[in-house]
Amino acid sequence: TEFKKNPKLLLVLCGSVTSWIDDNILGSAAFVGRVSLKLTLEELPLHHCQEFWGKRKDRVSLFEKLQLLCVTGGIPRYLEEIRPELSSEENIRRLCFSPTGLLFSEFDDIFSDVFSKRHALYRQIVRTLVSGKKSFREICRELKRDDNGVMSGYLHHLVESGFIAKEPVFDLSGKSGKLSRYRLKDNYLRFYLKYVEPVKDKIAAGLYEYKTLDRLPEWDIIMGFSFENLVLNNLATLCHRLSIPLPSIISASPYFQRQTRRTQACQIDLLIHTKNAVYPCEIKF
Image 1 (cartoon, one colour):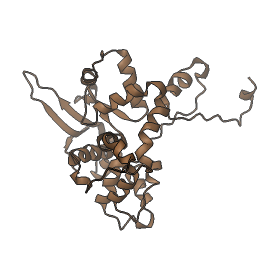
Image 2 (spheres, helix red, strand yellow):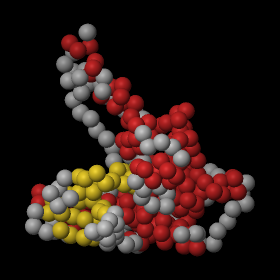
Image 3 (tube, helix red, strand yellow):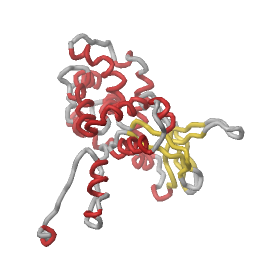
Image 4 (tube, rainbow, N blue to C red):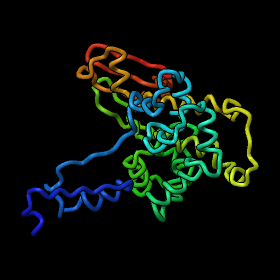
């Protein structure tokens, strides 16, 4: 009652538990009409990411930069740990495969902090997406859980927190249909669950060693998924480079269709649909 009389007062609420903010602040009747700005922090665009290599940014190869970004994504806190004088492989080894590395323990800290007592189920959901995209029913079936509103709520929280993305399929009218799949959007989570967590005890004991990153199991496949994330998280930049005017775009997202009696199964990494043309894009690292 007293604070609202002060026109210079600005209240900023921030946190990593976006679902809690949505439920208790933005969705609260007490705050209706009083929220001036809702801001969700996304990953940094690629052209900002390269600034973390400092004076060496023009001397480090694009491959080296992308390989490291396939592990960190565009997360500023992770990029701050880059040592530009080291190769991407040396940086990844130092950050992920050392008991003192930031990204060795970051996963447990994230899920315990963000999701509290329910973090175990959220971790299980994320694990199902490490090897590729899945539909809601496929996730429920793999976890042996009912495909109901409870599971839908968990997935919504992961989407709102920026860990996964829900990808609807758009038809030629630009409307999203019933088909959709979930993608693990966070590059660090995929790398950790695939390569660090299975050998975490050995790393902690100083007993784990590998020769080179490209000899890790399914390395090319995992890097392909992670590179796809970098592209999809920078769609506006990509469209500019392809000389596709943003106002002309009706939809831009991965596309897939199931096999039926009349149609074959089909999957396109990225389909950009404009007023005058459709651009099918294959994403390869």
